[in-house]
Length: 195
Image 1 (cartoon, rainbow, N blue to C red):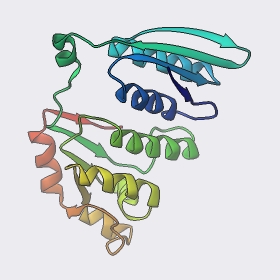
Image 2 (image 1 turned 90 degrees about the horizontal axis):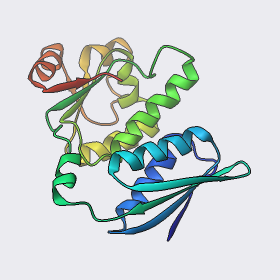
Image 3 (image 1 turned 180 degrees about the horizontal axis):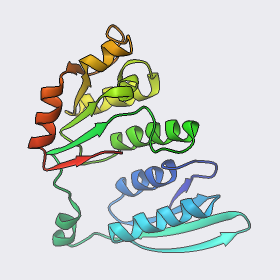
Image 4 (image 1 turned 60 degrees about the vertical axis):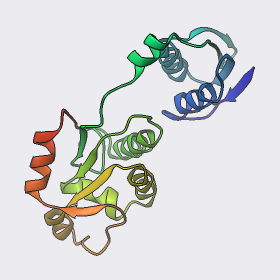
């Protein structure tokens, strides 16, 4: 049995830690410890989506989720794979959502980090308006975006936006693009995601 201690970890880390533990075995059991109900529910949902059986119990403030991984029939494995190499992600802000600014920054960092953990990646990520701060001045997101770029994802930042925010000499990853290319990338994409 593999034990994963995700106590004290915030979203998306408990799910990512669980996913990585399950990826390292062909079959067997993974026991995950978390200290909040949301993480417990997220791990249960992930397990269900992947076709794994699981059971949960609580010991005080700690939740234990035991996941049983068995080899899936080939047809189930094939249906789990996503076809998203023609997907484009468009990021127009350095925050995710419209609520609290600090939470929005945390969510956006989590979104970009979580992309690095995905097996199926988008073709490109387009940054414009305040989104260019993520490619030019935010070291943690630049590191994750470089990882995505190394895996073949195009990282494209709007040149007019970099100029507007005086970031033209600060680009930390990817390349500069223009509005024509931003529109063309979206028009050709099978799917466009806007976090």
